[in-house]
Length: 144
Image (tube, rainbow, N blue to C red; front, side, top):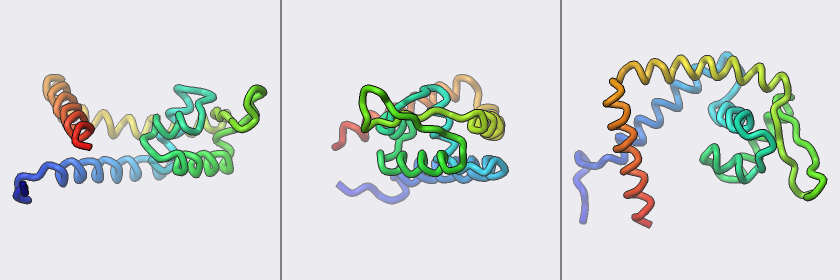
């Protein structure tokens, strides 16, 4: 069954995501990080030593994309990878002191944006929006 274009929600969801990512990219630009790099640093900060696959899951990207971001962050001196004594094929990553400092600046910039977004909604509106987005994920997950 076809859904008329004016009733479709996918474009609205994609548009909101696009605007959010552009706003984050703009907020993060002075820190020298992309949104993907910021996301990876944030995940590494919360989970030092996380595997590449775990980082990919935490950042909602493919393992290949996570590996590319890790490589760039390592080249920038923001992340260091170390050998795992038990598994030589795994190279866990952690933030360097410079990575921690850059993340603090980036998180401050991203936090201002998140605060601006939060302030546009009442606590009830936020809960309702989260509920609706959760329902979207559930419906879409069950569709395939």
